[in-house]
Image (spheres, one colour):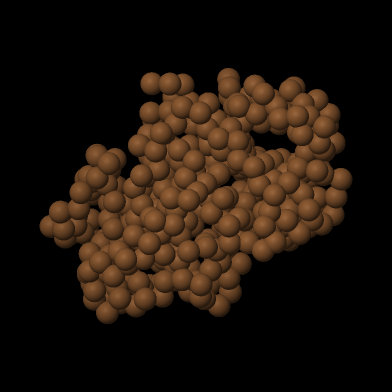
Amino acid sequence: MNRVRIGLERLLSAPPAHLARADLGLVANQASIGPNYEHAVDLIDRVLPGRLKALFGPQHGFAGEKQDNMVESDHGVEGRTGRPIFSLYGRTRRPEPEMLAGLDVLLIDLVDVGARVYTFAQTMAYCLEAAAQADRKVVVLDRPNPIGGIEVEGNLLRPGCASFVGLYPLPMRHGLTLGELALFMADKMAPAPDLEVIRVEGWSRDMYFHQTGLPWVMPSPNMPAPETALVYPGQVIWEGTNISEGRGTTRPFHLFGAPFIDPYLLKEELDQQGLPGVVFRPAGFQPTFHKFQGQVCRGLEIHPVDFRSFRPYLTSLTALEIILRLYPGEFQWKEPPYEYEFHRRPIDLILGDVSVRAGLESGWPARELERTWQLDLAAFGDERERFLLY
């Protein structure tokens, strides 16, 4: 297997001439590391000394210290150099003109996890829009999609459900790298941004993160391992409910449950569905924060045992279907606000289509709902071919 070299490493080994003369901004966080676990800031400073003028942090902060949604970060200053650190998850989620003043190029080096609702993609979209309006160039330093680039799953986002957890008509699991996502988004923008993607070398679409040989640093506080990214495109739906998604434990998104759930009954019902590539284990947990803090929750831990056949979105929708049927009196949809939306239901923003929630509420099996979006999914598969780099 060829060694995988991320966009950051390729930039460092052969810096484009236009960057060697440019004043640079960098959108990054604690997971933006290169060889030997060194951070992108230190590596860029070494190769392009004096060129990096400003830093930008996405949700959870530049250092990744903030928990959950709508926990904001303030602007700051890098202690060693005095460079400004602009928060893109606080008073504003878009780079403002004064933040881009004095910059020629905005570099983006973020670890995405392959799900539509992960907010780093929306931060990138806002950066592309702001850069286009300010006549600045954007260079995305690409990284592998940790859950592979072949499997695509879920309904497409409808315009009425656009929000900071989804702006474009993507399925929940889109199978694109961040650079490919940037190309997809830029194609729909006017004015079109000046965009360059520095590709990954040695990565193929059938590779999962454990096959890349790259180190993992959690890109957000509840994404501790690459396997978490694999279950996330399904398990994130619990954020729109009163079911704990395992926040406040050491296994977020793998564990899910609530005090009122019978884990053995839930497992029995799920096992009857014949879902591929997954095993469910009855589990109890007591969140130290977030939903049901200090209370004992009963539920399941989800164990993907075959990455290729596992379908995270269908799996979690099926679990939601069963919980709706078993616990109609205890189950509740989460009320707003959620990711700066104060009126629309969080579950609709997460699922991306109100008809999915309505179908589940009406008793439709998840597998039947899945059939209704296959034509849209096939059309997306055709469209995304134009943006594939690997």
